Length: 157
Image 1 (spheres, one colour):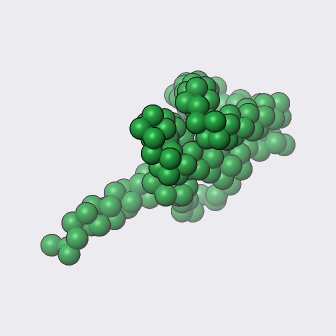
Image 2: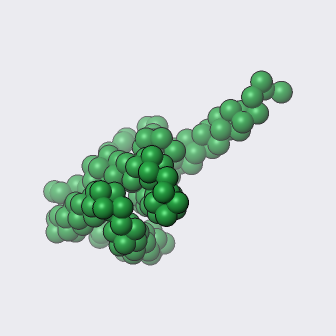
Image 3: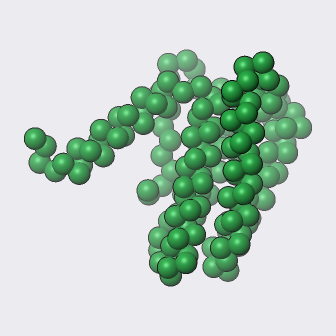
């Protein structure tokens, strides 16, 4: 038995996530980023409502990192055309709203971003479920070669 069962369970969960990521399609990776973004927004909203300023800041920072280090770099402006350009503008808008929400301690900004992310996630779910509808997938580049390990670590959990 490990010395610290909590650390052992975290290591097990991390291994499971790495396996999931390694086996995921580009569409599934985008959906995972959306899930992480929504979870961070939820945590930020709870912390904001309870006056836990440090936790609010950490959760918003994680949401910003997912946008700037995960979703934005995945856009392929050449192949994605107008779709990629529109997504980039939307991500910039979300970043601005999150920063305002943090500075003004206003949950309405977080809710607005969460609604936008949920709509994007729904669209990606629809696209990924229909193999024939691949036109919008050109907006996201396949940055890693087949078999490469991808890490999705965006700040403190």
